[in-house]
Image 1: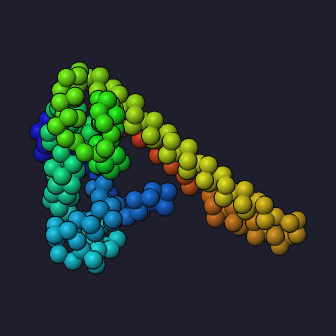
Image 2 (image 1 turned 30 degrees about the vertical axis):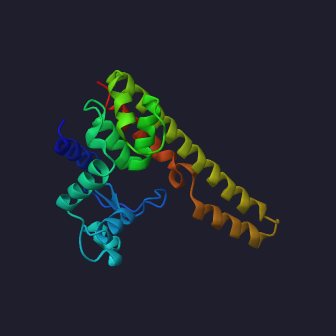
Length: 210
């Protein structure tokens, strides 16, 4: 795949729908571009008005600018254009999904290079001496392990919130009503944690298998 084809595939996977999910730490997002990413991009000279970027700007983000952001921030700058072609789409997709620094460190872990988040000559040389299919399988394993850890952490954090509410129960009717309201506000583990993302998160990396 060419770089343009990789980015087109990412844009297709992320979709044009605007989201602002409370369980997603990215916040306002469109085309997979978060408010934080768009603000940093425009502040750095990508476009004017970076300091005033709001959720409304994310909602209005067009495909051409999203494409440019991906090309610069998720391919060129982290050096993913230099890694072996057979694993490049996966690494770029991981960068979009988990951050370029995380994707770089995962790639270095997969090839057994020094993990510093910088794709340099030594990392590339080590990767070129290995079978691309084996690197891809290892990258998938590492990424899916990371997803499971994220989901587990969010469920544990939710469980602590529930117990904190229940610990406030003293037995009076007014307290029971209050606690019930607080528990209702928390929702349930399926809707208020990252657990509901797990199926899609696991499926996406598997789609890169040959």
